[in-house]
Amino acid sequence: MQAVLFRAAFILPMAALLGAYCGALAQRYCLEVSRGASVDGRTLAFSAWRALAEMRQPGSLMLLSSGVLVLAALHLVLEPSLMATAGLAACAVLLALSLIDARCGLLPDALTLPLLWVGLLLAWAGHGVALENAVAGAALGYGGLRLVDTLYQFWRGHAGVGGGDMKLLAAVGAWAGWGPLPGIMLAACLGGVFFAVTAKMRGAGSASLPFGPFISIPSAGVILLGTDVQYLFI
Image (cartoon, rainbow, N blue to C red; front, side, top):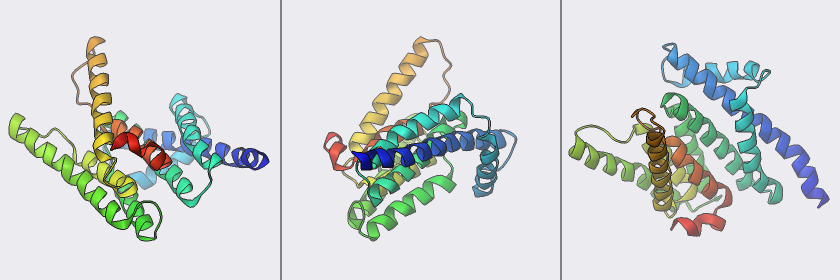
C-alpha cells in the first residue's frame, strides 16, 4: 500500500501537468492554423514550445485535460510496467489529437505517424502485441477505413472519412493489434451517431463531425488495459 501511495504521489501530478500541456498544445496549434500556418511538423513544434508558457495561466480546457490524463494514469499507479508507461504516453498523444480534431478538424501527421511507428517499434522489441499482430492491425486500421471511404465516395460522390482518421486507426492497430479494431470502430460509430443526434436535437448546425475523439476514447481503454478490456472488442 505504501508503494502505491508513493507512486501515486509522483505519477499523478506528472500526469496532471502532461494533461494540461496537451490542452495548451491543442489550443496553440489550432490558433496558429487559424492564422494561416501550414499544417505540418514545424507548426506543431512551434506550438509545443509556446504551450509551455501558456501553462502558467491554465484555462478550463487544460484543467479538463489534466483530469482525463490523471484517470488514465491510475493504471500505471496500480500496475507499473514499461507498457503501462508507454500506454500513458500514447493516451497523451490521443488526447492532444482529440482536442485538435475537436477544435479545428485536423489530425496532424506529426502526431499520428510517430504514434504508429512507436507502436510498431515496441512490438518489434517484444513489448505489447506480437509484431505480426501489430502490422496486421496497422494495415487493417488504415485499409478498413480506406475501403469504407471508397464505398462512401461511390455512393455519395464525396469523401466521408478523412485521411487523418485512417492514419489514427492504423496507429491504434499498431498498439492494440487487429482484434479490437472492429469493436473500437463500432464504439466510435455509436458515439458519433449519438453525438450527432443530440446535436441535431439541440438545433446545432450540420457541420462535419470530427471523428478522431470517438476513435480515441475506446482506443485509449484498449491500449491502457489490454486484455482486461479486449474481450469487449472482439
